[in-house]
Image (cartoon, rainbow, N blue to C red; front, side, top):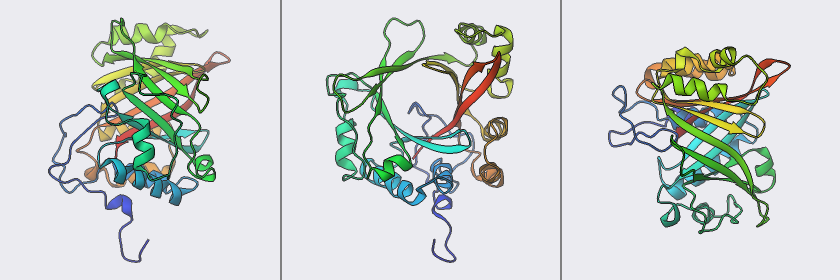
Length: 294
């Protein structure tokens, strides 16, 4: 960083014409005037400074941003076992008529990352994601697994399925089911949480993972994964974000950054999620994440 110059995460500033999207790439109205305040990407670039291979990550994220445009990609910055992880998500709801494909990302990033292309154009996916971490950096940007999301026709609520594709054409694996609920539909949400193959008191489980402090949001998404379940809260405000960070014990430096700049982050809405499982009759939080656009 040049002496006397702000770090790049403080240079991420909203312009009057900038759009607002949540982690599903659905638009929302800002909850306060935003011009000149921090973009949601400021949290991403601050978190990157705390991650291994931070310079490579920053340059790679900038490459994706340059190739696809501002506010076109979604990030997930996550904490698991005391370490940071980063996942990138790309949406195009036109599915088989999509313009934003895995192949386009490979071409747009000029070889900085290389995704497997076994999920061909015949697959009606509307979103795909991939991890960026030290292992990918060490492999020169080669990514061995891409997560592809398709719809789930016939469900009574909005839902979908994720599959993992590798470089082996016949090695795709189902990874998770997820289901969206209006946050006001509390009975249905609690019923879904209780329908889990875990030996645990159902009422206690719902109280532990469905926090009242976060339930005044837009939607709640419940996912069933292979070894965990997940609760996502979409469009929480900055005060709720701070509650989430403290609840999930994020690093004090990151919590301090959000608290210090709360007045420059109050125009945004945030998406947060937590993976949990049951061990020895107790709820164990395995991983948590914060989502935004860049």
